[in-house]
Length: 169
Image (cartoon, rainbow, N blue to C red; front, side, top):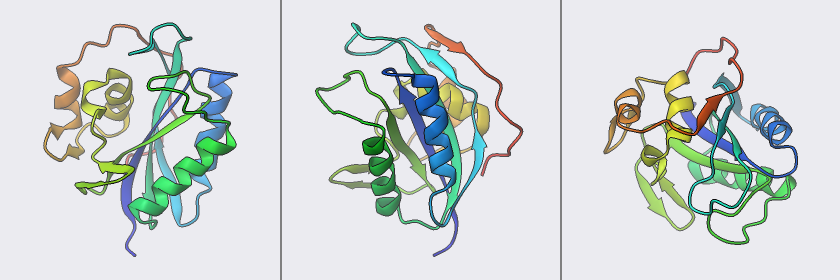
């Protein structure tokens, strides 16, 4: 299989969220047939939906991978599980959340996997770090990342760290 670009959103707000996200970025960089090629800064964000929980640490990474979308999604779920992810209820606090946002411009809807991620363009905590590493990437059905971000309020988001100098896929 040809190597393709994929983007993953990371988030955590239980335990040591900063460490969880950093550890998960390392695990993503070690996936088989996959290279981590871009990483956003870390952001602190207010919870959405269920508000009575700690703030989140969020980030986005860019990968080049030969894994299929389903194999990549399975790997993300395995990483979440190793980090103690519990899906108690919608928008619940979590030790780690990994969302496959985009996979080589693919549009698909299968049980457990929809691409592009169906709520990504509504979430500043996803779009801001994604725009940092891939502002010109096209989100099928929505437009370029930077244009999608332009309409989102960024209230409640605080940049915590500067990313390294890796280029986006």
